[in-house]
Length: 228
Ligand code: MN
Image 1 (cartoon, rainbow, N blue to C red):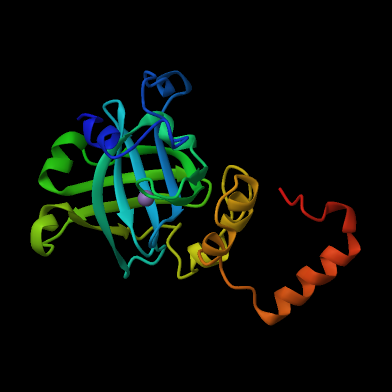
Image 2 (image 1 turned 120 degrees about the vertical axis):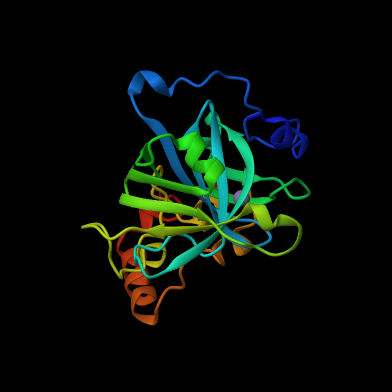
């Protein structure tokens, strides 16, 4: 596994994403990194990443994860990312690869349930448990028959049946950053990104919650503009 593809796509003079020079250091805290980054690029998607052999294996999941075991979510494998990428939350400048706002939507560790995870990946059937803030319990990534030139990159992310399975729509009900509690629009505002574009990735406020939001803002005028 190499970061050549990752580095080739990015100009590190322009983006604040990590180049991946540092050695992985997570061993000491115990456990391999698991992270999902919600990314409002040209299309909204969720980047699902698992640390293995010193890099973050990465899949772009257009609809994000589902806690419902009957729902299969398409996951397109993309280039390996450096382990330092796991903490990246911010704005990728316009004109650069993946331009847009990135949120650490969930984070934690993972453990393989397949005996040999590298071999399981090769076979296209990786079973694992997530120990995140939002996602927990047993999951599987299965390679599927895709279409066209990226056929071998096409996988499905599926929740296994266990006590963490649910029909709750986790992406809608838990839209905030697991690192900073911010919404995408907050991150874009704080980091000089495109707030209007970022906000299209946040759940729309219902009329009721918009009203209570307005009331809350009126009650605490001193916090206006500083919401993290
Ligand atoms: Mn992405």
